[in-house]
Image (cartoon, rainbow, N blue to C red; front, side):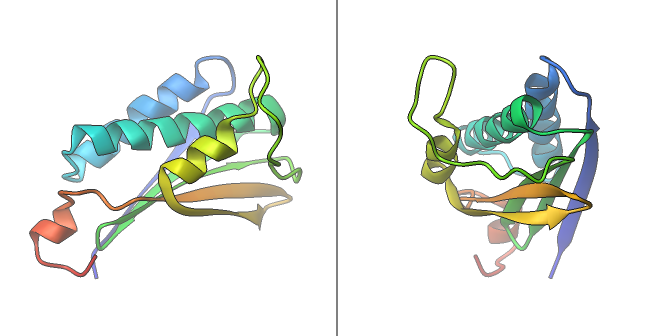
Length: 137
């Protein structure tokens, strides 16, 4: 079993989603994930998680990326205990959970230091480093 973890503090503000997308893509690429379409989905999921935390969360944002035997989990923790809920899309948003569900294997929410952590396990990368080494998917 081979595991890698990256913890990143994300500055609050309008640039947080972009900074998080770039950081996650760079980390995953550095770990050997090379499929560009999959990396784009990882960036999209990251952007949705961070955007939701910036708009509806509280406190500092902590972004974690984990890779274990080809499975990748991206999570964002914030200081608000209010959990995301599906809502009807409107011009201001409401599509985040739908996007996350469309491009992930599964996702969930857990308590984290008085706030919450929203995590997403990404769909398997077609050419993940673990698959290249012969590990189980």
